[in-house]
Image 1 (cartoon, rainbow, N blue to C red):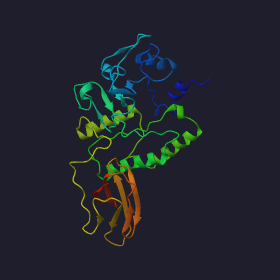
Image 2: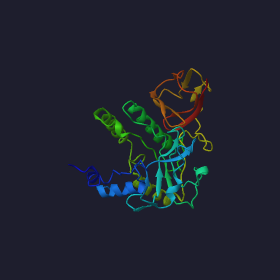
Image 3: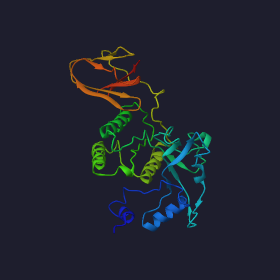
Image 4: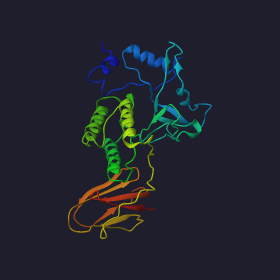
Length: 313
C-alpha cells in the first residue's frame, strides 16, 4: 500500500505540506516518541509544537503545558531527544473558551505573563489570527470574506502596517469527505485570487522564515496584534467635506451621502476586519443596519477616505 507519510514528504508535496503531532502524550508516549515514529514512517520531523495549553481555569484537570518544551524532551519509549523551537495554537481549558487568537510572532515570557514578549526566552509563539473553523457546517464564503476583510484592513490602514500578520483556518480530519473537500477547494481557489504581495499560503517553517526576513527588513524583534484589537493610536483618514454618514451613532439605518454623482466604492468593515457591506454607488444610499451587532465600524470610500461610526443599541 501507499505510505502517506513518504508520499507527502516527497515532491511535489514536500514544499507545502508539513506534519506536526497534535496529541502530545498518549499511551505512555510523549511528543519525542511521536516525532521518532513520524521519522520512522518517512515524514520529515520538525521542531514545532502544533498546539498547547497556555490558559486554564482548572489546573488539576488540565495544567498549562507549554513551558516544559523550553527544554529538550526525552522519549519515554524510544529514548530519543527532541527540542522544540516554535509553539503554535495557544489554546485554553475548558477547550477553546479563551484561546489566544493573535496574528503575530513573539516569545512568551512565563505562564502567568504569556503575552509579554521576552527576547531572552527560547520559544517562539506563532499566532493563528481569528482562527475560523472550516467544517461541514461552516459557511465557506464567510471565511473567505473574513480573510479578505483582514487583508483589506491592512491595505487600507485600518490595521497597522508595521506588523507581521499570520492567520490560520482550522479544520478537523473527521470532516474529510467529498462535500468538505469542495468547501476547502472553494476557500483555497478564492483566496488564491488575492495578490501574492498581500497574502501567501505557507507552512509553519516557511512562515517563520518570512518573519525572520521581516525582522531584518524592519529592525523589529516581534509582532503582536490580537483578533478584535481596536486601533487606538493611528489617525483616522478624514472624509471629504461633503462625504457624510449619519446619524452617528446609528441604530436601525445609516445614510450615506456621496460627494458627487460619480460611481464610488463603499465598504463597511468591523474592527475584526470582516466585510459587512460592499457596493458601488452613484447616489446617496440608506443602509438597513437593524440586525448588525452593536459596536464600532469603519466605512471606506474608494480605498481613500475612511470614517468610523458606531452601531448603538
